[in-house]
Length: 78
Image (cartoon, rainbow, N blue to C red; front, side, top):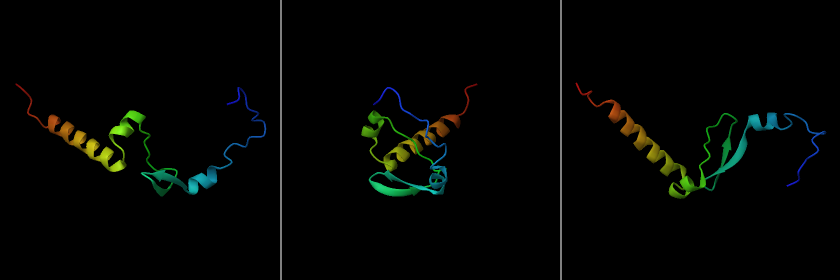
């Protein structure tokens, strides 16, 4: 990479309208049309190795949510 870039001709928001209309992204090897308001989470590489696809990530997160709810539902010690 260069130490400096000439941005004097840059145009702010040049691609904003096209991006807002939707963009294509690749998820789990599949091309998906995504709007600008789509929910995406970037996984760190060590997490990605343990959970290689969206299904496995969602499964574990649902288990954690259920476990947290079960802990909250435990009777309080008196």
